[in-house]
Length: 221
Image 1 (cartoon, rainbow, N blue to C red):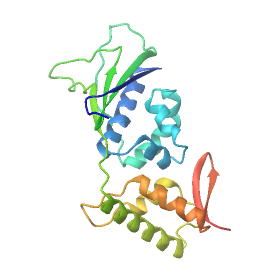
Image 2 (cartoon, helix red, strand yellow):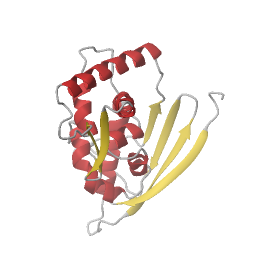
Image 3 (cartoon, rainbow, N blue to C red):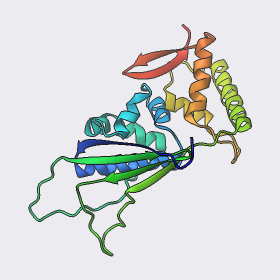
Image 4 (cartoon, helix red, strand yellow):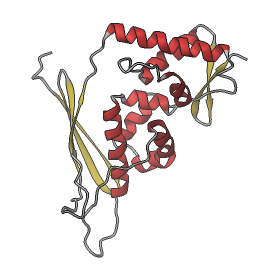
């Protein structure tokens, strides 16, 4: 595939302006962390498609109602990207269509967001957010991937030996326990934890259950 070749697609969804503000906040957070939509689905204890559906604007208000608190915990942040929308004096808040155009090439994804609102501008208002964003595809370093898996596997084995799975642990709880490693170069991603947990399940060391519609990992009873 040549680097100048592109794959184009678009998607759209209905939402209020405050829902868009939250959607944009979580979208920009994910890009900043370098996580994939599947990473977020896993940390939420959901199937792979769950977060991707939200990011593709499917039932955004419903998703935010059920998942925004946990997302803030996962990111350890509750700050919302500031934006001030222009409204006529007696304009009522209504759901409107938001569209995203995605262009993909060999090295990155480019997102162009089309919204039906305009932003207030001026020194008394926040700087409008960028509506054209890019996400670089990860470059896999085999050695770093191996080191990350070794680190996560070691932490999980220690948790297992010390009753760290007792009572069941969620994906994001376990991620908090394995992500910090004392090295600024070794970055632990949710996918590393996911792979190691599934290896432990295959070996019969732990099991995964559905508790309150989320994954819960625990010892074999």
